[in-house]
Image 1 (cartoon, rainbow, N blue to C red):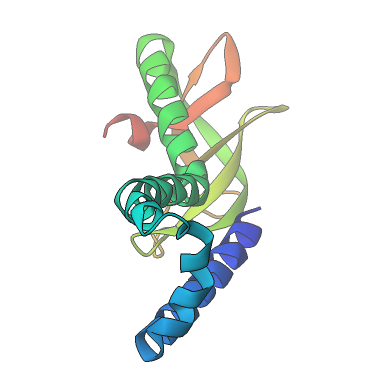
Image 2: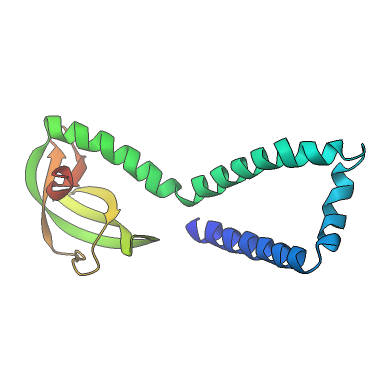
Length: 164
């Protein structure tokens, strides 16, 4: 999904850049595409468009594009805060074994955003997503300190994430 959104974003950017460059070279040509759509009442429609509709449309466009682009990070941050509060109240410290580390294709401040699957107890696994340092990437088989909910061990998080 992230790749599709990225491709759509790149295409929209290229199209927008092309129209912008063309407007800089030949503004009359670009205006001839858009002005007839809104210029049917001696210019009042154009000023209404540029003064009201266009700014609102651009704000909505950017909110939707950035919302889609950053949705995984926003959702993770919201869930992470709830889980942190829950684990601070009822969590038990333990050690878990890393089963897998998967790249999500997202990079935050030059750090990969990864999904890590760990085994809390024999047969009980938990997953979490976080940014990881490029020099400190966990590998399958590594043991990490975790805090988990004893009534639901699938709700777990590395102890280092709770200290922040």
